[in-house]
Length: 235
Image 1 (cartoon, rainbow, N blue to C red):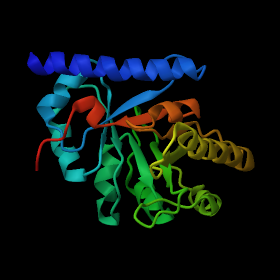
Image 2: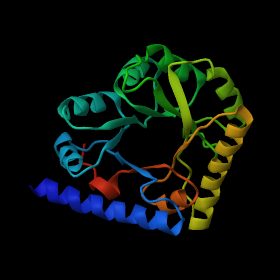
Image 3: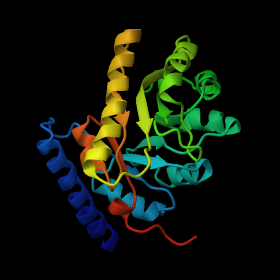
């Protein structure tokens, strides 16, 4: 009962913040999907959030995610892989996730396409290209200049559907600077759609400290961890 009330209160706070950001940006209500970034959170706590209506969970570590998925059997959850991808883990990722946000090279896209099994519910695996617009050495992701050749290289992969981009920008000092980098990502999506004749519709960008700026610039998915679940349990 304590977990249920805690989850209800935290969800209400975050959803209210999202709704306010949507309204300020002139966005349609409920146009932004809330993904609970649930790394290190317990399955018991996640169950309470799911019972209160949270339907999307984002995990960084494969084995941890698989253990939670088993414990949450019976709950209606869309599973998002949002962490770094090792080549030897693609088969299990392809078989256990609805969305893969962190595709950062052609090899990973090819392996996911080869290892994904189509179903009536999920005929294609939804993927996002992780882009590194700040060119940070410590972060994965392709550069803006590499988007075109990367998309060209995966056009023939019939089992995956590239839905858009994922972005984890470097911290900014102001909301204006936050908006600038998110606007760049949105423009890249629009330009890429026009160039390739695509209809990519997803931008996974925005976390606890910059979700308002991300929503103002067209984010369709935000990934919230501590502000939703609270502090992660100590290792």
